Length: 520
Ligand code: GLA
Image (cartoon, rainbow, N blue to C red; front, side, top):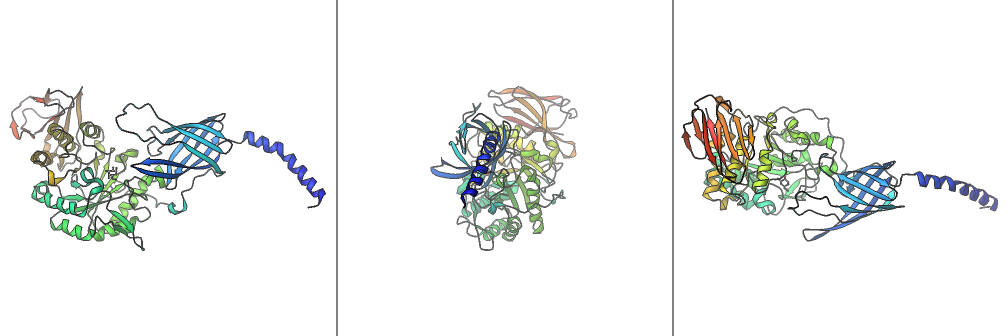
């Protein structure tokens, strides 16, 4: 370069310096894409994950998206003041639930953040503490895009689906998760099918044998899902289950991975539905899980409708069970996306507090339930050992009052006569399976004492007196207050006897127990 040209260029660059400095001081400190790595221990494994924050800043306000190599992990909001940064990462599917809070500093292209634990009301469950995050600004991009391998074509516009004619009463059966979780194999499914028949449970109505998560293998060269080594031949297994007069259920996720980290149906929905049909599957539980990483909240309904349509296109009747933990008022739209049942709660655990939380919180959801479409407060824990006989009777009664699916989750091989007698109480099952399909509701609550009622076909009424307290207590069913005509014929469904109670019925209800009646 000639020296005069060098001088001109140098002068021009120098002239730019004040503008550049001015831009630097006014440019939002946090705009852009920040990347880093986070390493943590989970179940004795060291996991390193790529971390990406795509941030926008307006004044002191920060918004953006948190992601990792598997897609979106949260929505970011926060503030910056000087070099001090505070952010919160929310689950965009649960806008009302508290997010994860971080605070730290920004210096030039470095952002260092530390997790801020919340003072928890309930510290009984061990919570995961994310490690500090160190990020570098790696680009000025401020719009998040899914990694190339995870991008999906636009979802078809969603049209409400007509009923599929299945599950006219709440589905009844068994599912592997509550007892076997990841240990379930072909052998347990066959044995369960045998036991459902030999124990009398099948005759009482438990006909679906549902394999939950962890059956999935890899995809073959054509993208067909294969079962893993625990399930050598799904078609043969389905034939075995069918030969017992039972039906087979299976599990998947609309996301790339299931909750247990196995292969999901993402971008393979129609293909998977055809595979299930070819195997002879009769029921699909479709569990949201990692779908949050690849879809936005407004896409959830279309995502479920897509699989419902894929199942219908196979021509094989398959019950469609939505599992998205009750997010986004699923009861308002679950039926229109083809769901026969939808979870309304977090996962149940085998203890009274969890069961009571899931069950009693269903009051008010009645209008969503009816023949072909049911609220699902999760599967039964009866027989798994964590609750007393009274508590398990409460569990069974409450689910029956709620017209909830009765999906047992215990080891049928080790089932006690007591557990069997609860699960096969025909009078209580008849309430659950009542043809009218109206979900019960709470009529009164006085402290720990709750009275629930469920209108039944033919003008009968089921009444449950629940004592949620830790001491036995007298409770009264007053027919007039319950809208039951005077001098009804009353049967006590756990004592298995008729009772005479012209105006009202007073009884002592055990701690955490129930007295369940049918009046007509
Ligand atoms: C979620 C569901 C459970 C079970 C597990 C399997 O937690 O809510 O019911 O299916 O996934 O991984």
